[in-house]
Image (cartoon, rainbow, N blue to C red; front, top):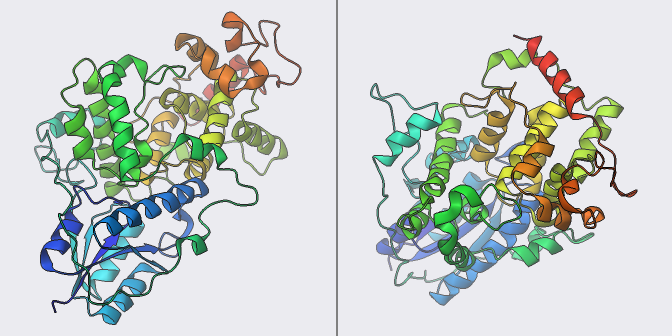
Length: 459
């Protein structure tokens, strides 16, 4: 019988438009494998929210594989060791996988390729990161010209259907039990809100797309309104590869209206991968060196630590910031506009290093993507290669009113549910702050002046 081939799944947990699976299925018997590797990423192993999602996504993938007469083999350990041993155990001749661009996965691919035949395919992005270049052949550093050039390659190829059959090996290797991995929280179970909000897996991703299609044409304006369901909420499905960006593009590209803005967000996702391909340490190092001298308030100070904890708990006294941080804790996700407001508040109102926020989001977001998370935080902080200027300080109270966040605040900050009219945006100033809602931990003007003084000192 033909020797089996291993398909190494990572953040590509789908059967459709899955080039690695299609290639393996065309060669003969297939052994689909997911390796839980917390050693290779080191301090970048998945956070708690991502691990919850992973559990359910792997369960969904295994179920769809069973429908094809196949199954998902689970192993835990350093991935190059695990897959090399599995190849020897099963007589597999090669490993197929989709390329990943996080620095630890690139290292793992190099290590594995020294031990077995590794065939990598594209498919996690609209185009392979690094393939869209300037006239001189250099990678783009700024988003706008990158997006312009990317559109010359669009639309992406039509998404491929899942294989009609996935041949099974003569003998299946042993698999670990998903429940034994402890990916879900138990004591306490802080993910009950996740379960009401999300359906991980390929079917859940497609249902989310279907629900978005009628709203896609209004995305340009609606995405900025926290009280309106204007965003697609596809980010965790895209992050875990339960649907390909090519599939999303083809489903949405003809919806008209401002759908171009949504397609630009898919482009931003590609852009972020181009950034980390050029700067692998982008989540831990300022892209603009001058910011290395900025005197952030250090968490070692008790008062600063209290401010940071108030931010993480949604107890800052700024309703829109608090609503966003509570939504994050309850659902593992935060509205697009509010993410920027909450990040700006930590960086500029509290003068706390953007990397502290990036790490918090890494642990608490179900869509915690290394490239996108780092690129977004450096954009807000003004430290990135393409970023907002530090001196542009978002006024959270004004943002709340401008984008009509009242209903959003009343939902996520129940202490404020009874605050009427526009007072919801700043109940303290309106004299309607309930006794169980905190005062502002710093006044906007004082925070702004402190931030401007800090950045002036490094000018």
